[in-house]
Image 1 (spheres, rainbow, N blue to C red):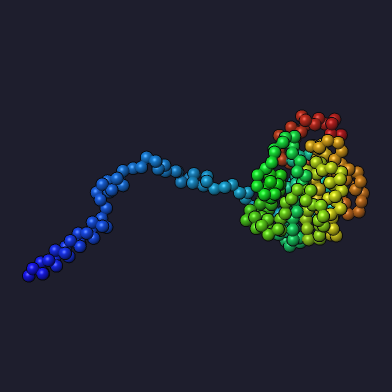
Image 2 (tube, rainbow, N blue to C red):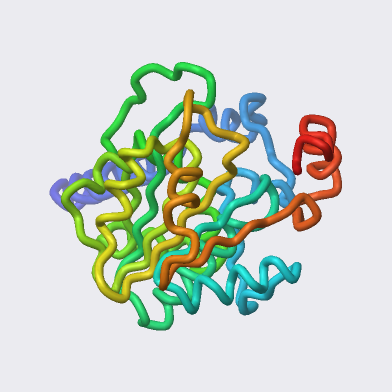
Length: 270
């Protein structure tokens, strides 16, 4: 009898211990019910604000907005070397970038090379942190937006990682040869020296596609620049097309036209 009573007591004690182990103290339950003033509830409609902005891809084919753009696009498709000259906002860079993306996506080319002279526009930024690609990214951001729109950000990131899209300063073009499966864009060419432009032009291989863009009137270097010198030397050469955009071809916005009109009156544009 004594052994049975002792066993019942042990069993009851064990059950109480188990219940105490898995039960929550009353003070904890009270504390949990109290609202936490440090927690802020965000409206559901604003939950997307933390996402990084990415350019939305356009599935529409490239269409010229002006007759000048139509001639420029046609020239790039038909010539090995095309020079696009004209004021800001005429679509020089966009048309070239969109055509490069179109050629890469269709398999006509295997690589896009984007380059420009690393010239600061009247201000000294000092040494930029990061790798060479990160340093040069600030110079080529405009083309990245164009490619993101035409190919999609995911495709662009993949192509950059695998060397299908290369962005490098003009100085790094020395020693290279642009092959037939390459689309090369030299932007802001008005900031090249004559020696730099000669070096770049002599990289051109057979059947590659090269586009040089710039506005001679917005050069950030002193003296003559490589773009104006190239226009003088290459005009009329077989396989080369020199395209001039005019003030009337600006498509960026009406305000840009008005601004350029104030900075460059009509008599200065002749």
